[in-house]
Every structure is written in structure tokens, then in C-alpha cells.
Image (cartoon, rainbow, N blue to C red; front, side, top):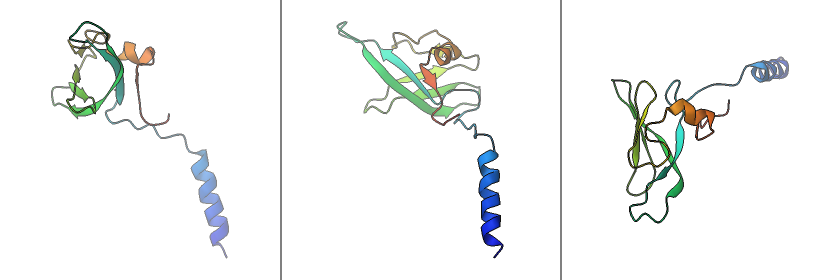
Length: 109
């Protein structure tokens, strides 16, 4: 008999909780969008998405694509991107890409 009020109370309290903020790596985006340099010089692959793959002990984070021959980028502990084969990400700061909407969390915030 007390089950229904208890369930209603639990649902109400759950609805009032703030949204969970969970990313794969704290303070870094889960995914990054960059363009790959085309070796033929004709065109770049636009909107290639990179996902977190590993976080190293030195603070660097490895991102990879899900393509058959993965393309990678490394985000240094200071946020600098090392990706010489990417036309619009190499040398930039990851937080600049977040601000531009090109790096983001996969979870709802």
C-alpha cells in the first residue's frame, strides 16, 4: 500500500536531480571533428569524427576514427593538438575546437 507513494516520491526526487555530467575523460571532449589532408591534393575529407581511444599517464589523450585504417590525433596535456595530417586541427588548442562546436561530449549536459 505504501509502494505507490514511495515510487512516486522516488520519481519526483530523481526528476529534480541535476543532469549527469559524464564524459569519457574529465575536462576533454569525447569526440573531435577534423578534416584530413588529401594526398592527391584534390579535396579534403570533411567532417571526419575522432573518438577518445586512450588516456596516457603523461596526460596526453589519443583520439582515433572508426575508419578501417584509423587516422589519429593526440591532444597533449596542455590541450595542444598534434595531428600533422589534419588540415584544420594540427597545432590548435582543443578548447578552441570546443568553442567552435567541432569538439563535444557524447553525453547530454
